[in-house]
Image 1 (cartoon, one colour):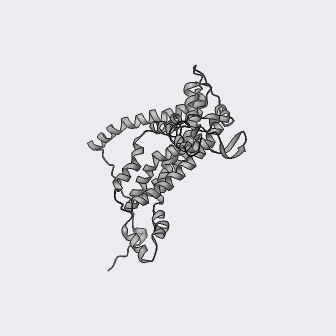
Image 2 (image 1 turned 90 degrees about the vertical axis):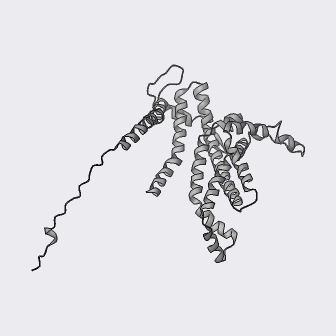
Image 3 (image 1 turned 180 degrees about the vertical axis):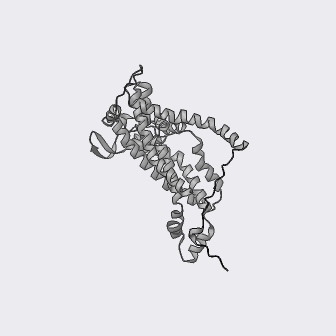
Length: 321
């Protein structure tokens, strides 16, 4: 005689989760991590919070005044001619810098991927500028592009003369409120110096990506009748898209907070044609003692960098999960 058991008669017993006991290794790891976590919260997030509070205060003198001022410092900045010029220069520098680094880095990496003789020599040549600080790069290119020295002396022999990084001309000038929009010629000189230093990083990233692509992919495309140009345009370069995104994010992070290169090479420049928020913040805070205004500039710089970094980190976490 068979016994029929219905679903109603079946009792589902929930699985009991066993509490994981902390071993000596867990406690040791926590002991090592806790000081770092505490220091990060104090010296990173704590100071960010302090800077945000100062930016909303009236502390614009040597005597601290932490009384609440609201958005007064931010409103002042966005009506300030110099800060408007800084925003224009930052956009120009970021677009030109990222665009040239991505295109040039990709092109040079493809050339190095052709298994040329002396590849290691060319790699070292491209990577060497990365070993220098932006201050050294600024001094070097200041001498090279100086109207009375360097490259300009060579150009004068052919009847060519240029003010280079001291030129206050703005190409394609148009007015947005008080500020003249366009591309300052002097900023192009700064872009050249920054590209010279950071292109090696893009080359290294793209070269690693090219070497990770299996040769079978190229062989299959050749068997289908694709030319080398078509292989790179339709297959290889699209496969390098994650690396391109990484290069853009890292270069944007550098360009939005650039300070040392411009400060060593040109400074704010005449009519602020090479001024950026980092230089303005330094002079406002440590030379003018306008601490609240300087903190407001720092918070705006932080937010501009976060616009690029935070979405990238979120997408990266989703991709890993």
